Length: 337
Image (cartoon, rainbow, N blue to C red; front, side, top):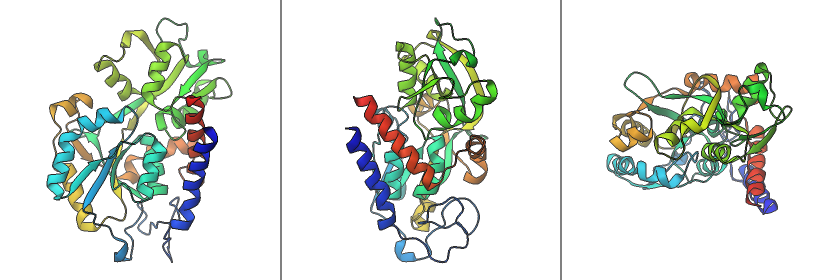
């Protein structure tokens, strides 16, 4: 199983070169893959210069980050999916993705047109898949954010980060900001270094980490505060069963992005469809009171995320993504054994 998953990941990575249409004479690319260009310096892929490459599909495929059960979010987003269809006058299909890597690959290969990406994977989606983030969940005057928190069992003896030394700690996936990259960048200054001071085990998802801590599979877990809070509100967990031993500064929550090669009129229409929509009561309940898609700029809004990665010696380029994809595949294979 492990070998087959790694082989599939390798084939996907190898196909990037053979199926790419690298832009010629690009004056600036930054961390973007060779398929893309960034001549205006906004850190996201420019629209292809060749109009023949612009896409205006009759059916739009969209997805939401697999941080929790995809089926749950397909139902929650159903009214919005219907709105997007009516607003764009196109058939819209919600695509359930099972991993960050699968979602990013789907957009890179042109099978996904609009998507919600988790915080860390957003930067990878920008650089290796040409994603253009344009919104996050939010309110009238501000976007919605979250904190990296570290949870452990309330009944245990872990009181602070340094108590994690010698323990088994669940990180979510290699590309996750709060579930992996931020802990690796921030924890050393708090006196504990992942993998050096404690054993890292990849759970795959934030909810899996939280439930694993509750069951005693892991001693602790760094997770996104909004996921933890939503699970508590749904009755999946009791906050009183956990102890929060660390809380970071605010990060932006998951982004919503479209593929870089959508025809301008379609991309503009999608943005207006998102910005004009107001969440249903069910969506507001699921997303901590957020009632709309708040406009953002990737270059400025995601600066704290990129800074955390840089502080931890990480990057969001293609080479880093290939490495993280292989690690994520290996972790998934090990979990299935």
